[in-house]
Image (tube, rainbow, N blue to C red):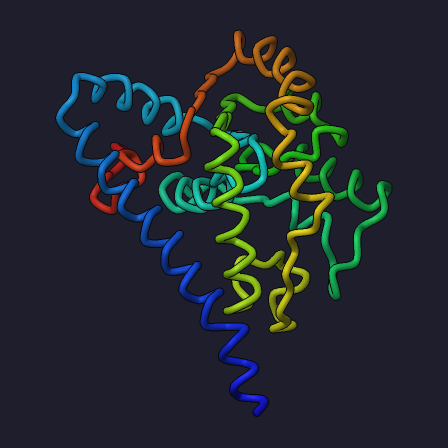
Length: 231
């Protein structure tokens, strides 16, 4: 009986995961195909060139916008250390860091000369991150893309115990982290949070390399496995 209940719960969630994951892969493939045939290839090369020479990159955007995936891939190519703000904020058993602990760790990271920092936490050292960066990547995606990304990530955490912060990834726990409050935050990100951070992004972006991606799939052409950065 327990196995039947288990299947009833997990099978629909697994099918939903396959649907979202398959859709994401299909859209990513289309973006690669389209951008490989358009004159926008020069623009993509300019973006890659900016990233290639960057030493301190911050990636900002709504939850579910693809910040972590992009940061990991860029870290592999540029050999810059990847710092996730979620890793700094969440500890074992999903315990939150205190503001003092979080600010201390983030302050130490910011003093480094090379890094890729991804995450929002716009009320914590946001201006300082912008000031220390030389390249700003904004995942300015639609609400639909963000919500689908959040659902896919939550399914990964619940079904496979993946995409967890470092402080809890060894615990092999299942967690469904989509609460009504979190959903409201994601749904209202473009309306409430974006206007707060956008003026600062544009202000510092004028003095730094500013890359704005209107879709998380927009980065797919320069995330291809055969894409190589020149020495």
